[in-house]
Length: 346
Figure 1 (tube, helix red, strand yellow):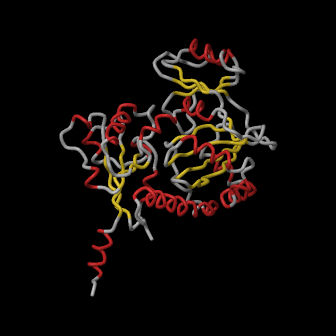
Figure 2 (cartoon, one colour):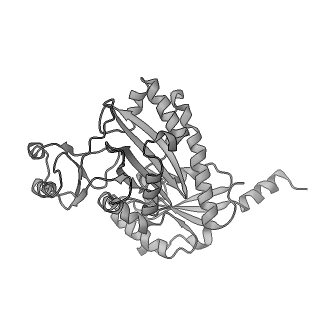
Figure 3 (cartoon, helix red, strand yellow):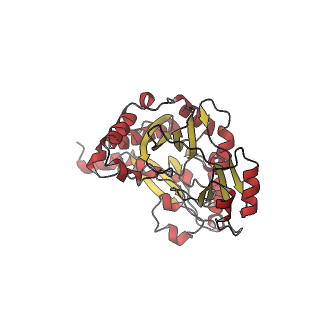
């Protein structure tokens, strides 16, 4: 007769062991041992889909930019059934990203979101890769090395039209912009000293007919598209703070709930353009921020693996979003099952 302790040990033996590969250029080996992986540790929060799953034993496996010079290294092949890489932004952490690419080449177990395809999801590269996709529009984006006003001005002269345009430092997210430039005079007012790389992107006015801005987020997890949100704002720079505005308008909450529950019907362009985007990108786990362009196409702001799925608001007004947590986890379990060839979390 089995005992509870024997059943617990058997369940532990049957757990899927996943190494979470993370790290940043700023953290050294001793710091990585005490650092929790996450968006502050080189990438996204996809590992949270594995949190508290009884069939998963997820372990942190931090690497630093000097990892390949150290004597003691992780034995990924002997210790894990799969590795989940969350080092996803080559602009934020170029040195540790390079190390991760080299480390992954020696890993024989399945690697989810290996670094090599992620290298092609920088803003200027994804702009080029999505060019020509049916029903998709990502505005022209240029990378400017050690940006100065003269270099920005020359880049704008090559764009059609040159204004308005967005300027942001490379490796930044969460709505951080140096400015929305509407004219040459506004460009002259921006301080650029040539010490940082920047992106310059054509700005598209994506206001809806009611004068409000709507931004949608989707995640690809394995072969499943999971809608994440439909934010509404009075400002073009739509970010998480828009939820406070939405609380004052029940129609916006109902619209987001409908979008999450029947996305194909409620998202005007439909999901075919989103499917085309994820096929073109070719990653296991990626987020897409977008809007609906004035001509009805999907207007892509960014598509990369650095976006976060969590956290979720604990305000009861957004309780309709709670099922997304199970959807995301189920998609991650299916991805693991597909990649390792054994059942995950019956």
